Image (tube, rainbow, N blue to C red; front, side, top):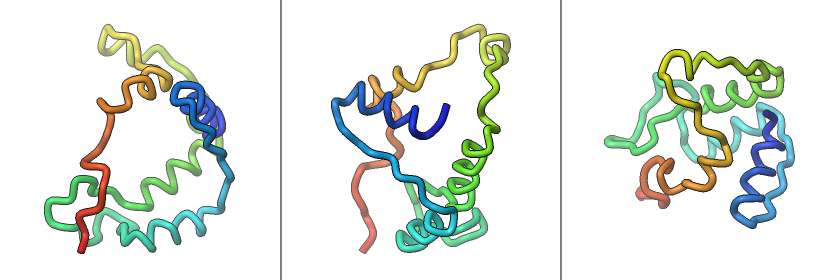
Length: 108
């Protein structure tokens, strides 16, 4: 699944019209830097942060998608858990169940 595919599913479910425009990894890092997201997990996180993530993890995840590292489907999840994996469409349809933290900034 590409990011374009992901956005298309989100638009279908939500009725939105989000457009995906690719940016370079450095542009992506600049966005996270502007938001004061540490580049690695060694960085300083706000005490009690609801989303203690690093930009390196998010940028390299995008790189892995572009390089096709997520292209292979396996039945491993079902074999290991006995349950079907959730689809992206399901997650968009139940978006409130998949939110990380509150949806507003608490920074001063």
